[in-house]
Structure formats: structure tokens, C-alpha cells
Amino acid sequence: MTKNRYSRNIACIGTEGQRRLSDASVFIIGCGALGGQVAMLLAGAGTGHIGIADFDTIDISNLQRQLFFAEAQAGQPKTAVIGERMRQLNSTIRVDVYERMIRPADGPAILSEYDFIIDATDNPATKYMTDRICRQIGRPGCIGGVAGWQGQVVSVTGRTDDGSLGFADIFPQPDADPSMLPCEVTGVMGAAASVIASVQASEAMKYFIGEGRRAVNGVVSINLLTLEMHHFEFTPSAAGTPSPDPRESQ
Image 1: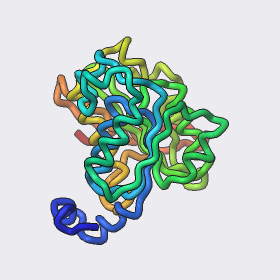
Image 2 (image 1 turned 90 degrees about the vertical axis):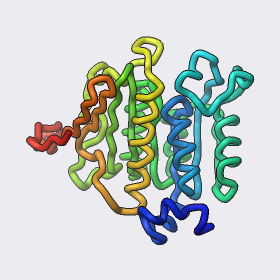
Image 3 (image 1 turned 30 degrees about the vertical axis):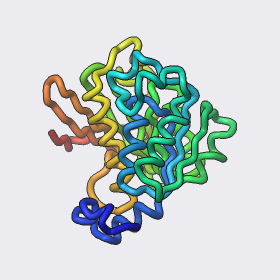
Image 4 (image 1 turned 45 degrees about the horizontal axis):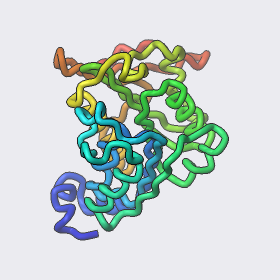
């Protein structure tokens, strides 16, 4: 770890916090507007080991929010391009690239090699799969979505013995969260994706350094058009479904 390289980080989280980031590993599912920016933020921050997975290729219609790609790269695999960008940004970290879709059959074996899981997809089925795998392998994670000018973030502990809520407990129906709809349907503003990606990256960093308040047992909702930010918290009921909690911050 080069102290000068991370001096601005160290001013915020200290030398020990930076060491914890350098020892950490994160797996990111999806390398679009959310996942790509999360990957670059974590790479720049010095997260020691990052895995990225996506089966898609770069499309020019996505460049209004996927700012880490270039027009000339249209048609190339997202993971290969973003992986190389990460290595160019920080040559001291390890980057693993999975040019494929993560599936329930092999997902647990792959994700169990990492400390923290981030779902940055716009596919409802994948979000629920990520939630299930996190509990299956006992890994914490963060699931984000964005639509239009707004987005939401949910963090999970990955544990089944602490009474914490999973993503499926908070959103039992796929259509309960508009940010889970494909961006082709809802549209998405690049600025909104950048904000949600920043929240997801910070959720991982806070977990590793052991500081701050995370979006566990609740939802962080941000609307850039109205400048509203809400943190809705829930308490697990006896039946295992969320009950309203009076705490809410703006």
C-alpha cells in the first residue's frame, strides 16, 4: 500500500481502515451503469480483490450513463473493458473477470470466494438470486436499482441467525420496486445511476472499515428530481416479514 496514493482515503478512514480495504474482496454482479461505477470506485479506493461478472456487450445507447466506455468500444464485452480500466487505474489490486451470467447452480461456489457481494443488475430475478445466495453462503451484500431520476439501495447481512431482513423480505413482489424494471422500460438518468453506485460502493467500504450506518433492515431511497432522500427502516416481525419502524431520515 502506497501511503501517498491513498492519502485522501487515510485522512478519512485512517491507516487501519485503508489496510482493511486492501485486504478485502468484493464481487460485483453486472457491469452496467451501477456495476461499472462501483467497480471503478472500489478499485480507486484500493479494494484488494474485485471480481466482476456480466455477459453483455457495450452498446452505444448506454453511453449516456456508462461513462467508462467509449464509442469505439461498442460491441466489446463489458467485463473485459472495465476490467482493463480497473487495472490501469490501480495496478496494485487483483481483478477477476467473468464474462458470463451468474446462475443459481454455480453462483454459490463463485461468490463464496469473496467477502462482500454487490448486485448492480436491472434484472429482478437476479436480485432475488443474489439475496438467496448471500444467505446460503453467509456473505453480506448490497442490492441496488435505479429508474428515471431515482434509485434504491438495500444491504443484507447474509445471516440467517441474526433476525435481519433479506431483500425478498422487504420486496416480496418483483413489481414492488420500480427500480427493478429494465431501463429500456423506465429510462434512467446517468446522474441517478452515479449516485446509487456511490451509495453501493460506500456500503461495502463501511462494512470493511466497521464504521457508519448501513442500509440493513431497510431501504435507502433517493430521488434527484425532488431532492428527497429517505432511509426507511423495518423491524422483523415474528412471521419473518417486515413491520414498519417509526425511524426515517431525510
